[in-house]
Image (cartoon, one colour):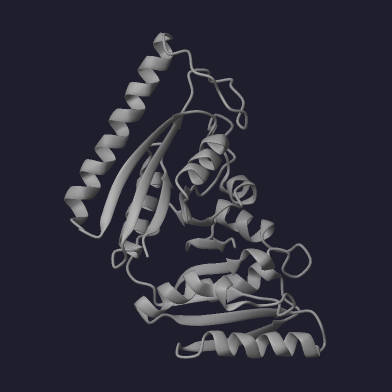
Length: 280
């Protein structure tokens, strides 16, 4: 089945790195990549409201030309660099606020995955880019992959999957994860940060379900006690074999409200590997 992937770009090196990562990650799958650039003629325009273009405005014309030229350059670069006949590329130049442009593009093109580049720090007051954290909280229509600017794709050796064993688990929620894990023969490290003394019957049942879901893959279960969620996750990230942190949208309230916000804040500061939020 063809996968439809939306890659947002502001033409920065950070955004280009995320595009390169996604194209390589899915190099074995049939995909259509949509490269989106959202532009505005007014620097003070809203970040979340739809904009109505004045097509005769000189600033609009200039920004539109810059957007379209930049997008076509990306397609030319990617096509020459990767030469993958399983991949098709399309461009979307949108005169709109970023969040509105993302939501509209996802709906119109039936997008499966949104790929964004994550900056190391978002505290530069002159930088108007919307933080990765806000995008990941605002966009719920598809899964989201956030790639740190200095992370280069090499393989998918190990995925860390934080869970709490509390929510009902459906195999369909893990289909995207299983697909990639099987392609790359990836090891799954399931991580539970323990706050209770013992798992209750429901949690034990869900743990057994996970064992069944990941049957056939190398899957290890880990339990850490009395540890901050981010510290526990980062202890796995520090292992050079870890290539990705994934968590399921249904478990976004993992351990109270410790996830996803504090984990995603780590992405905004110093998290060193991609984070994949699987929304279903």
